[in-house]
Image (cartoon, rainbow, N blue to C red; front, side):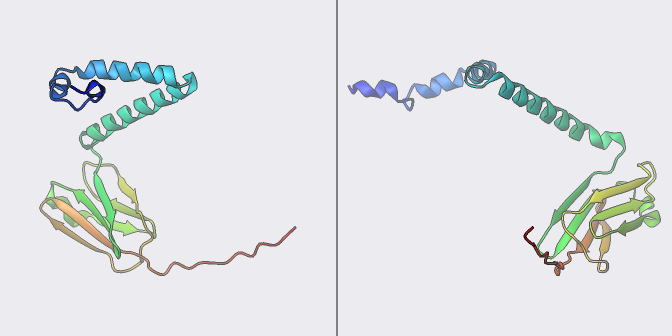
Length: 158
C-alpha cells in the first residue's frame, strides 16, 4: 500500500530472513566491506589485534592446567581483595604471604611456581591485612592507603 514500506527492514518477513542467515556469510560480508573502506595499514593493524586477542583467550583457557595459581584481584572503596583457588587445604599451613605497597607475594604452595606475585590495583597499608581459607578459596584482604602524600613541583620559566 505504501511505496516506502519496502525500504524499512522491520517487516513481518524480515525475521524469517534473519533466521536463515549463515554466520560465515555475515563474517565474509563484513570483511569485504572493511577491506573496501579501510586502508591496507589499518587492516593489518586490525588483523594483528584479532590474532593477539585470540592468543590471549587461548592462554587464559590453558593457564589453570599450566600449574600456575589463578588470582582474582578486585577493590572496594576501602580494601583490595585477592582470591586464589587452592584445592589442597594441607598446604595452607606452610604458606607465607608477603606484600609491599603495590604487590602481593605468596611462598610455600607445593606443585606451583616457586613464588606467586601479583600486582595490586591500589596502594595498600603496611598493617591490617587478613587472610582466610574457606571452600577451597584463599581470600586476602588488604586495607587501602587512603592518605597519599603529594609533593608540589615548582615550574620555573627558562
